[in-house]
Structure formats: C-alpha cells, structure tokens
Length: 591
Image (tube, rainbow, N blue to C red; front, side, top):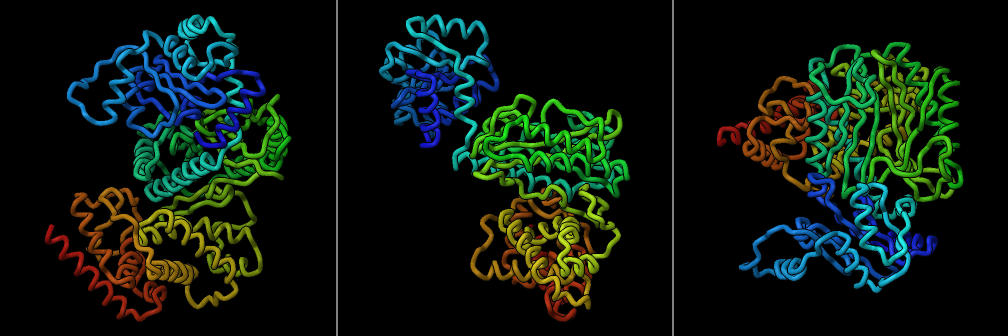
C-alpha cells in the first residue's frame, strides 16, 4: 500500500473510531490492496474482502482467485481463501505453488469464516468494524454480519469513499496517462473519419489504439448526426455523411484508473444553430471550472455552470449534475450537483455540460481537472475550444467562435498571431495539429515524442510568427520547423523506442510515388511481418530520405514544397525519394 493510501485509510479508522475497515466493492478492494479480480467480472457475486487494521492489511478471496493473487504484486500481510476450486499441485515445485498449497490446504467454508480468521491474525479479536456493504447482495451481507456476530459492525462505504477522494501522486499519474491515451486514440480516429466510415468502425479504431498503448477501453461512444442525441448509444452501422456532427464520449483505464473524454467534431461546417449551442455549453463548462477550488462545493460548480449556459443562449438548459469525481471508478464522489459536498485539494473532477435535442443533436464537452491550493489545473491535453483539424478530409473539430472565419487563410492568421491574437493561434492549431502529430509520429514512431515535438513546433510558431515573411505557404514554413525539430531530436540519440508493427503502419503503399491521403496509423499494408521489415528498412534510411518519403506519401506534398521544408533543391528531393523507394522496393521483393 502506498503511504498516501495508508494515511487516508488510517484517518478513516481514527475519525470513525474503528478497529478495522472491511472493503468489499471491486474499487475499494483495489484501493486497499491493488488487486482486481477478473473472476468477479464473470461471476459478480463472488465475495472478495480487503481488511485494513491500524498496522496491517489482509485479503480474503474465493479460491478461484488465489493463484492470481500469488502471481501478482499484491502486497498484504495476511491472505485467506474460501470455497472449493480444484487446481493440481502434486507435481508443482515453484515457490508460488508451495504458497498456494499452504493457503488452500484448508479453505474457509465461507467468506465470513475467512474474515473472522484474518481478523484474528490481525489482532482484532473484538471491537468495532466498518463494513463496505453498499454493493454486497443482501443475503451475502446478512451472512457476513452473522459471521461477525461478536463484533460491532457499522456501514462504512461512505468512509472508504471519503478516503479515496484525494488522489496520491501515483493515482494522478495513472489518471493523466489514461487521459492522454484516450486523447491520442481520438486523434487516430479523426485521421480515419471520412464519409462512409461507420460508427462501429470508428469505435473499433479507437479501442484498437487504446489497447495498443497498454490501456483498457470502456464505454466507447462515437455517435453521428441524430444518433449523437442518444445519451448512451451503442455504436451502430450508421455511416458518416457530410454535415454530420460527431460526438466522441469515451475513455479508458490505466492501472485501474479511468479517463472520460468528450469532444465534438463536424464533417464540414457547423450550422449557426449547432455553433450557438456549442458555444453556450462551452461557456457553461468554463464558468463551472472557474468556481473549482478548495472549500467551494459541488453545488457551487453546478449553479455556476447551469446559470452561465442559460445566459449564453440556452435558456431551457437543465441538468441533474455537471460531473463527478473520477478515479478507480468512472464516477465517484464528489457529485457536482445540488447539495454537492465541499471540494478538497487533490480531488480530481470530470466536469461536463451536455445538451441533447431529441432526434437532432447531442453536444458534450468534458474537462478533467485536479483541485489545487488556489483553484484547479486541467489534466487534458486537448484544448477545450481549439482542437485538431483535418481540413484535407473536410473533417474538423467543432470549436468555440472566435470572430474568425474558417476561410481566413493560414497566412493571415499567422500575421494576427504575430500581433498577439491568441484566437488566431488557436485556429491555426485546430487546422494543423492533426497533420503535425501524424508527421512527427511517422518520423519518430513514438506517440509521446510526437506529441511533445508537435506541441513544441506550435509554441515556436507562437513565439516567432513575426519572422514569417510570407514568401512561402504557412504550411511549408510550419512543417520546416516541425521536421527540423524531429531531425534534431533523432540526432541527439533518442531513437525510436519500438519497432512499428503492422497494426501501427501508415495505410498508404510506400512504393506509390503518387500523393496519398493521410491515413489511420492503425491501418496496415497487409501482413504484419512484411510491414515490420518495411519499417526496419525505413529506420535505416537517412533522416532526409525518411522525411522526404513521409512528406510525399503521407502528407501529399509536391516536390517543390518538400524542397522548401527540407531547405534543399527539388533535384535533391527527387534523389532522396528515389533512394528511399529503391530501398523499400528491395525489402518488398524479399517478402
């Protein structure tokens, strides 16, 4: 158990004058011990209990879970099992097998009997216990209370929930990672979206990318058009059409900790009605976030968000809540609603202002923040009002109105950035962030590095916009900055940390010298082994050859623009491409 958890649980014991706390829900058991039972997902009535006394912990599991505990890094002082489950141990010689045989030699007949035994080992032979009974089925709860008849037993689910609301550094790290995985997976889906792509295909692409990054997807909603108005829809075979809104409302978990991200995109341009509704809910969300600070209440956040949304143009807007805490469960205290409790530093909140028009439109944006000493800090990396754009496909994120037209040229926007116009910078980011990420990813083959360097490239644009002379397209100038950052990064010795598998590869044929549209990195050329050899060969290309190849095949740039980005002649670009393609062609022939 981490020191933070030990301190929080020890405080709960003291406040409630308990000799021991007994956790029962999957999230509470995981909080106390780190153990998460897969068997309970199949058989949810299986009883698992984690016990916290003042100086030690214990875990009670059904025998089916015992080996999983012993094979994991669960660290408790005492372990007991209950019920029968046969596993052959006669010829097993490992230390784990010996421990298993010793624990399972005499399994308790019931979970209650196993609890009594571990309490005895913990030195709690009598006294006052807190039982996490909120989710225990009534018959099981009655049986446990009967087994604990010599103790005074109080309900303690609220005490455990209160202990969990303030997050430890480990928990914050896991929550942040879960958010970033989800946001990067959305980027992959955005690159895939085009008319004809179904909700089911988009949702599957998101989940593939999440799994590839070592996380676990849950509750994936990618809803189009009128389907976005269904608050919790399953993905369907509805195909994306021009003019459709797309509602992303999804998340994943890392080490058991959850993310929950909601963003809006549109295939084309939003209607004035859609834009006005989006601006209103965004205004409400930002008003709610402005209130978040220690000692403010969930009720304060709710009132601020709802009032601001109504004043911003949705007078009939109404909600029963505007968010929750988030952690080992997707929704946990505190609730941002009337009567909501006071906020504490270290809480992590997921704030939202969804708005649904039945049969027409569903809009939602969610932001996750950690409560700080004086306010809150966003944990999301995607900006609320300025997101990825994929103008080459006609797919863009729905963004807050900033007095700028989507028709305003990149070059004009850059001049406004030079004059200090942050809204113009947001729009530039919205237009180019998707392609920038994909280009950096293709050069570096590392999601974290690609994100960091694409963000650094935009920061350089913001700082040096005044140096853009306009003698080339803005995109050429920007990609030169990005490519140089990536090449410098590689020269410093931070090589790709993993070889690309077939699943992650670019969807275009690297031997096709015609410009190819940007493709989902999850698309494969076909055979995973062949693709691994192709990318192994790409790794052996010189940095300039690889950059030229990616700019032509993935980004579709003509030779003249590639030459401007790489600061060389068009003839040199053609030489780089010829040599790169020749090397890859040899690899394909060997396959």
